[in-house]
Amino acid sequence: MFSTMTLSEIMDETCLRYGDREALVFPKRQETFTFLQIMEESKALAKGLLTLGVKKGDHLAILALNSPEWVILELAAARIGAVLVCINTASTKSELSYVLKQSESSLLFLMEGFKGVSFLDNLTQLIPELLSCERGKLRSEEFPDLRTVVTLDDSKLKGAYNIRELKSFGAAVGSTLLTEAGKKLTAEDPLNIFYTSGTTGNPKGVVLSHFANVNNALVSGERMEYDEDDRILLCLPLFHVIGFVLSTFAGLLYGASIVIAERFETKKALSLIEEESCTVFNGVPSMFQFMLNSDLDEYNLSSLSKGFIAGACCSNELMYRIMGDLGIETIANLYGQTEAIGITQIASFDDRIHRIHSIGRPLPGVEIKVIDIATGEEAALGEKGELLVKSAYIMKGYYRNQEATDSALDTEGWLHTGDLVSVNEEGFIHIEGRIKDIIIRGGENISPAEIENVLKHHDGVFDAAVIAVPDELLGEEICAFIIPTKGYLFNAEEIREFAAKHLAKFKVPKYIKTVKEFPVTSSGKVKKAVLREQVKNEFMPVSHRETVIMKL
Image (cartoon, rainbow, N blue to C red; front, top):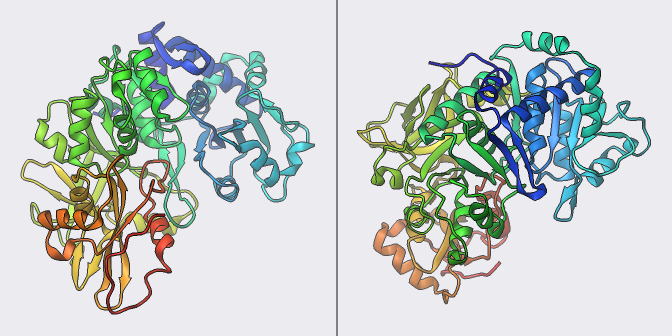
């Protein structure tokens, strides 16, 4: 059932099968790479890495927007058993420092930066030795593992190589050396470390094997029915599994072309769908919302036929609009976590009602269990509880963090997701919220996701996020942050009355606040910890409060 090939082995087989068909398309530079070209480019780069002394198990970090070089570097590292450490481009200087140290990376690949954020400036402020050292001979007391820096673009840095130079170094390396390096690998060896984008605390490095990446891409791609006629617009970041595994390699392994956007920009994405005749768009809910709020009449989106939505809960209304306005009738809800990649997914043959209301059924190789959050016993069919996952694609652990690994995986190998779900008699799973987000008001457990889904059905609500705030009498009260629909004259009481028609009285938000946008992680999840921080000083212990409206 499962493939035991490494990523480079299965990609070589794929590249030979699809030959001169387009594999990677990069409109920004008007570049196209065929399957055969990415195979040869990755071999050349792998040889270059060998000249620098890179060996099996070495950690190579990358800090960059999406590009063909990103994908080719991953394939090159995979050929020789190096582990690619994927760094979030939203990382602050201190976060970059933490990841480089914690991951024990010996090489760093990076681009200059984007949108006024200079990755190079942040790096040289952390490691000023790069301004004067010889290339490949970095010595830093603060970063003792890091020896080499390579730029992916034309940016200049005295102590860094350029990726074109690195490929040229490999010209003198024979194929035998590369082949011998590959023979030392198995599918169980680590391929990547993805750092989770948690809302609090330091990120944790999730170690995923070749086996997990390859096989999860295969089963997800099969359920999406990717084929060689598909052109997948990649706007999701490659430093996340939804962009790397479930979009890029899930597509490539079935012969699809990947049209690469450096990052998501609404108008650019819509233009690329039209110009490149993209058949697939995968995204997080906010991406779809931004697209749907554009003037769609300006674009020909008739080529679109497939896509998944992941990263955060999606309202039924948004699903209907994606189907109707964007024309993606077979839109697939996809649920996953970095620790297990794709977990559940809608299939092309699932009917509309399940497509809209559920996150599908477990992917092949995934076993699930729902437990009562109070007793820890398995919940009855249809009852809410925490989702536990046992999967063939589970992480090897958090890098250098056994305590966190033991906390996430129990002694029987179940991953505790922290998500509240229910399962119907047909096996379809419904997200009910996050356990840690559960509001306990006067002894009642309340799911913020339930309230958010109701609020999003109001014509005046573009998006909603619900949090708990302290209350002297009830312990916690409900506070709803709302982004109003453009042109809507906001009326908090009207919103509350609408909520009261669809929710029990104790679930109606007491506090309603309007905001222009939500703070979100790079995977599209609302940073509720940030929302709580923004209002923490407002909610002092008092005996009674009236509904408050505040614009942030």
